Image (cartoon, rainbow, N blue to C red):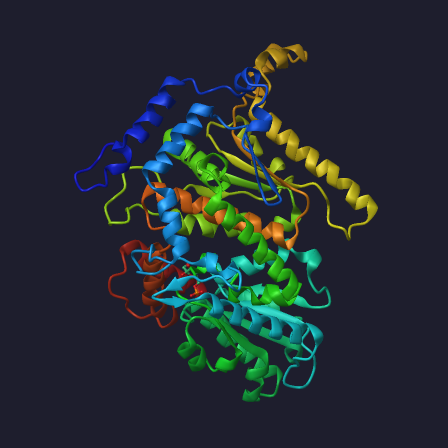
Length: 553
Ligand code: F6P
């Protein structure tokens, strides 16, 4: 990419960057994984890093020791660890919002001291955790009752983005640890069908709504919460006093919570130094804490902390988030990869990739640097994927034989969950056999000679050849416990951090979602009242007119 006069040139002009470009060009055609393994019998053991319960194998990457050393030099030159330390110290590294970035304080031990503007934030974190625990215990035991005195059996979290994806993902991930006698639902979409489907079979007198919104101004959440309030009051003879027993709020904005009509005693606080997509281990995790109980929730926080400490202290060559971040940069910036697949071989991680989409794409989907200058290099990838083995029967074809380079993470566990029957447990080996087979096939493929040797007719050989050399990271753990989930999430949080630091972008703002919000507010009267909205472009104006016509039919 060439520099524009107004662009931010530093990164691509750094000698560490050009050294990587030269290394990439010298290695053309790119290194062959068969050859790399043949040349280095220790590679499979050497290219593994252990963090907590995670075994992270990066041997199937298109890298050599030299590549890794050059990538680490880039990390040093861009001062990734300097920015990391500033983050952990509570400095305001979210420059466009002038905020500290301290999700790591959410899992700091009680006696830690982390200051923002001269104030230690850790006591406040633990005070909220304690308040959440007391409330969660009361709901779980049946002591917290609804307005009519019935115990709460249903918990509905209303939130969107970071106020939905985290708790919803973690609830699915930790289903085997949840109070099965309680029903949990997560409503996010402003499409009224979402709330309708979530509540249609629930009894209002047994239902608790958790309104989760950092700002408490998000239109989707406030609209759904208002409709949920009407649903509740309709079912409870309109008695406004019911709201206090059936609505709690998770927010940084007490004023707006009170304005909505929720008693601030029933509000669980967090702070502006927790980004929405980094918030599910804050008060935003209340629904999860009710589901799994405070002890399991604390185990999850301990898991986060294991990886925080690792990221903070492990040397560069064995630092898992650093390695994963740099490998992504190797493909995105030096091989033209546009996307990154996350493929969990666990049904319980069915929402994990959707969660990571916000974490990664809202953080690093940026095109100006921290000083506001257009960047002259690629930034965050498109993150996508669904659980194995379903993806194998859908899009893996393109990964294996398409024209695009798609680095992928394969995530699996040695043990199935305890509550499965013996017969279902036995399926676990088949599930994991698929994970290992995919990693192997992606890396080593099946050459034309091998295909011929299998007796395949010559005209079919090109169609049945797998070129291989598709890079994957394999992350293995014993089982999916609360701690392991915390470890996984923190691993990706810090990987995203590393990439943002190298690219010199602000990974903690999200101005790119604002324009759509403003325009939606402007367009709405055109739909509801047929109002003449100034500034609608001709295409959108025609669409609005067509919509109104269709609606009348
Ligand atoms: O999508 C923009 C965003 O601000 C996210 O960053 C955030 O997670 C989501 O909206 C919800 O915001 P809030 O928690 O303030 O309702």
